[in-house]
Image 1 (cartoon, helix red, strand yellow):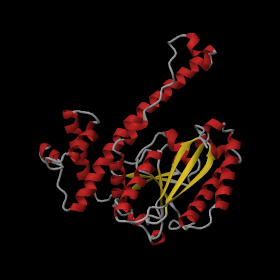
Image 2 (spheres, helix red, strand yellow; image 1 turned 180 degrees about the vertical axis):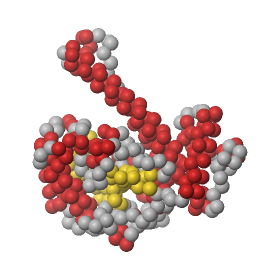
Image 3 (spheres, one colour; image 1 turned 60 degrees about the vertical axis):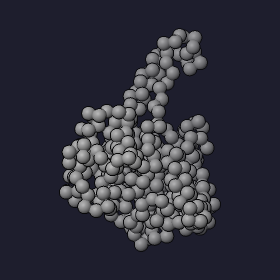
Image 4 (tube, helix red, strand yellow; image 1 turned 120 degrees about the vertical axis):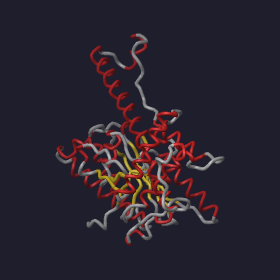
Length: 355
């Protein structure tokens, strides 16, 4: 398969994820691209041959101006404070209908340069928003990592003391429940994230047929609602096909150990090739049942070889919007696609727990 024949799997609409989340995706995805604007994507060492940064902007002057803008927002948010940090302040500025959308520019005394035209202004706005969202997400993921470490330490103490889960109440109140990070912060201003992310992708180089990989099912729900609303306004039909694939193994550390585990690497490779093949058939309205069954059988074999327990398995949801091209998603920025993707439909992937 040549570079122009492959599918481009994009993390959508986030620009960073925890190492655990990336591991789960890398088990079955052929590859994964992460959008880059100012900063390089944070890619774990073990995933260097599986995850890649996708730079969407070039030109030192534009990047320097966006960087200056971002620093100006940081400085201003540090002074003003308020909920959501600088992303929260930008939300207020964008939604303020009584004053110019970017009155913050005046308050920063010219630190934010004016764009030369409306298109560049949209690019600058989208870049600023996504960079702020990325910084917010990275801070939230640091908190999540801390929770994970605390839970590991807690479990180590339970193992040392021989305390089972059902014995916790009898031992006393000092043993805490497991800590879980609130993922709602990663969905903050989701609609704006989606719009800005697509705006930035549209500013970059031509891409192959894209597949949008969402870390949360809510992302797919949001973008489908947008498409549905826009189609209904124009009196057009909204039609999707939903496919359930799996079971998927969700064992922590699996992606790192696959290359060194005899047999597992070959099965995982079959899963990835099978997913590629299945998505091409689904996009072209070809018969998919046989390919889906074959892929599910391979997933089951992978789970069995990994010893994945039933409660650790997941399902991959594939949603294909059948009656519109991905190059012109209603209500969202258009995308630059190569000739091979002219009739390619919007395809969204997301994982859910259970089967």
